[in-house]
Image (cartoon, rainbow, N blue to C red; front, side, top):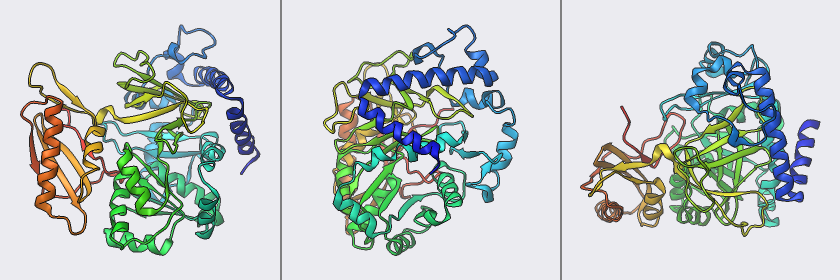
Length: 457
């Protein structure tokens, strides 16, 4: 770890010791610094921020951006004038360059484009080092017994994802392995695209201390563990990519005999938040600003669910992420978290893009969050994994992967009754639930979306 990262780590520890005021002071100073840097070096932000005060340390003064706007102005958005979309596109088209530095100084990461716009993101050295610098906050989640289990398994980390592309988890892991060959041997990416029995065999041989991956895939692995085919005992399980319900968290913890600490992150900000034992995500707000807002981008009060959330990543300078519409619906905790963290706590309801909208029995549309279905279906027996796909305004298609020994007809009958109950409870009108023959499908990046809304034309 470089001296710079040691300094960042020391400051991260000092920030939480100083409490909310120390964290907020750092956030304001870093926001003002990044806004000034973006105005000076990015033609896009220079134009966007024309007319703003000379110093801006309040994010509410900034216009809102999103992926579509930034990708459309890619060359002008970057603060490094050598960065062009043409060069980045050519770089990420080569799978042999995964984990190598673009222009010898930036990590290139892509998103799958399921929201309609494929993201191309560059991360500079400070942004890359932030996860390490803030790692001491996550390390405090482990007790002595967990630390012993970590050491007994050599600290090995299994990352279950889709290899072969420049997706953030894959590219960041590959970069770490290139930079630190000895330490890199403790990390390994496992492909979700291989047959499940092969994945189980490989994980059994690797015997990881930490198991991380998309929630949907970890749910399938929990079923394998419960059936006795997967036999690993990680100290920590880190699900990401989807909202973790309490029921599913309990199932993962019981199956693996491990602590479950969900991470809340995005390619745009890989160090955004870490989950605590009480089911909240604590935002690293000395380096990130997260603003819950309504549909008009006005602040949502603590304790109320937001329409979306605006993100400012205060660490990355090559492509400044400032007041960026992340698309997640979150709830900001109005009181201090029981875990004792001084960092603000949020719960994530799911991506706005994943909300299901149905015709209502009387009047306007009915909108339902993915978490509504997850909270209910996670409690039902026999389900290894489910996926609800909206194929028409009033039609849902249910894909199921069952646990060993489960009666398919009985599970279908139970699930159909539960889903119909939820739809009736929310006053959705005449929605048809179809039984799919195919199992849940994964996205190009390896993620299993448990709820897939109707694709907009």
